[in-house]
Image (cartoon, rainbow, N blue to C red):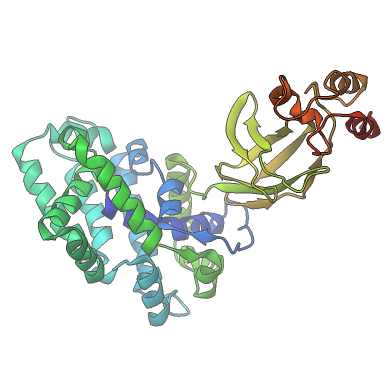
Length: 398
């Protein structure tokens, strides 16, 4: 993923989630969360966005570019009814946190150049990304265009980042790195040197994590609010709002992913780690995570919808929980406690579990059969005896 593409996506994701909720055909915004938003969040939330331009007709692409130009300009340059959405100080703070430079709207210009250059002649009647592939082939002129595009994107980067690259990797290597980032961002897979890609990916991640951290609470504080974005959208005519809404719907869902956080406690244990949390939607397993020592878990990157969570730990009775999340929601679940005693893992605590423990009575660490039988040592005294049997009996029927 090219750096210029990541930076452009980063700023888009900051206001798209708010922008969409401001349009009449979407529901109201979710309350602001204090979670951290990173450049990686932006890239993930709009992953595939570039390719989805292929869903648009040439006229829609031109309209979308025009609308985004107006929205971004209202955020950074032009005045709305109450003045700029972001003050000079707020803009400076945001630019510093994200290491972005929007003077002159270079990145938007690059986006427009891409659309205008690769959705016309030599596209063999195709549009969007398919038209881009048809136009490339690649031919010598494309190398010239890449050099031009690279120069424009590089000029839009802050001096600090260019200095950082030069001091860390050396001038020639950093130039090469940035250039190949642009190649990959434009999907020149045939020109991409395979041995460089792991290094490029690692550098992108380091840059995102070190430069692009800001909290959504801070965004709200400095003026990135649904109210301000609503004010911008209200400057559009009713017909333009409908057109923009239809374009966004056609391109896909721009809301950031949801996250589920929770706690799973193990009865009669001080170490609550190792519980498997399996997340399913219908017949599909979406994610599998495990709790840490205090019992906490987190499941990021979820789309809006209803999920079924299954909590399972050897020796404890499994539990299930349906959870519904909205787009971009941070869902904090109430704690769940797994009941001790389902030693044969059949979903019940009954006489069958007592028989299972009774069969292991007398075993200690180091004896044959201990590794498989040790979950029967429910009181953790390194000896399976009648005390373990009594403890399991207390939970029969639970």
